[in-house]
Image 1 (tube, helix red, strand yellow):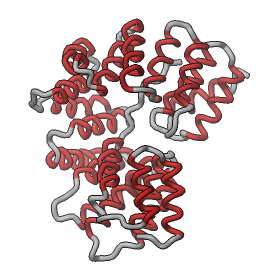
Image 2 (image 1 turned 45 degrees about the vertical axis):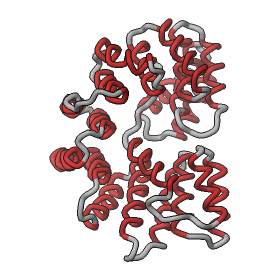
Image 3 (image 1 turned 30 degrees about the vertical axis):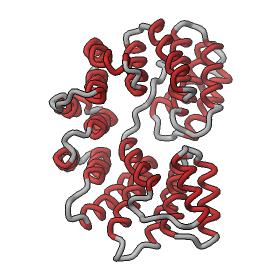
Length: 357
């Protein structure tokens, strides 16, 4: 059973962009309600449970309903409760009117993201089509999400057309190229997706972020030596994303000594994170130190929020299986598939472990 590195989820870039817009309130106008303002602050800090409670209070108090339901949806997304998030975004939409076209587009994009996370691809196609039909200038995120959903339905030509339309609108968006690649990879067509990674290599730049992004492309192409070369400068500058990425590069090269050192440095420089603890746990698993791995996983799972925790839960199964504690591993696998039912690797592990008890 392979350990699980940080999963780059398709459409994470869409959610990140929308979160930034939400936190600033730029798309919806200025929030005025006390609970809504506090909820916005909690979202920005990643305190999603607190935000959830504040937006529920905002709704009950009759504060700006579009903002309040929109915030409620985003809080649910932060907690990984995508069905509830979709319901909240639908309610937010029901409070918009024809004088709010930009607000409607914004909420529909949130809704499409939640629907995609649920695997409701037909709904995503419908929601994104509504966005694009109403938009005069198009929307790269809507084209991408619709394309990814079409791909899951086997409509490869239509998906490619949407992906190309998205790239035309955002030709220097590295996240978009990587998301398109992962869309193809998710349906066993990674060879098609490689063309988008290669196209991203043609983006030009000279700053730290450029070298980091080029390192990302080389990493996904499996060219780890080139990735490492690209990351030398950003890592020396202690650019946090580059430090995480070079940790992955070391792991991919089975260089667990340098991987462990970089994750320890990340924890010292930037503090605790689920991704950092997952990196430390993977190093420990590869070195046969399974109890240490479980300790790192426990520390990561104790942190607030859901970001990065799917990997920790998956590697927790791995650690118990490596310890040959198949009963506990099976229990963890059963819980995992309940929380992440669309993860095929998790399903396979549960099926395997259920025969070992």
